[in-house]
Image 1: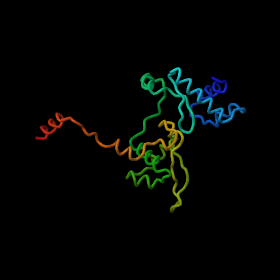
Image 2: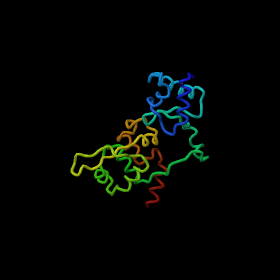
Image 3: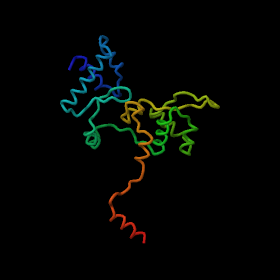
Image 4: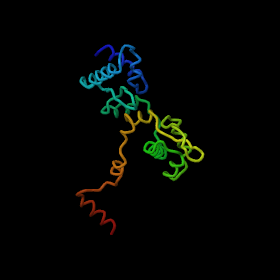
Length: 193
């Protein structure tokens, strides 16, 4: 690996968040953005070729060194990594509405969910998953919310275009249809009689 790639690797290893190519470029004033991208490719290829337990991943608009997915379950079982508290169903619903509708106001979120969203919005802001991105032109100029880079980082997304499309979600959320399981159907019919 080149000295620039080694420098970038050290920065990525020590960073707690994804770093953009521009941020990494500030480490060496003589390096162009193209040089930084070539060095990042060298790091990625090095980890892939030698089958390291870590990989260079592009997410949330930047780059981060992460544990490979095949090892994540073992690391989690050993409790080596610190996990943020899980999100409640209400928080996940609200976050999904914001992710797919952004910029979106509180009234629209409450209309979609059918319940008050003030506490959930506050919680999501405190966790750094959403932020105020502007004001609506409507009456009272209500706040509009959008997701943050931390949201992308936690979901492992490069950008919002990596979110599943609405059509994919409707297919994934349909109840499972048993195929060729006539024995199970006979048991269900017998139970109903």
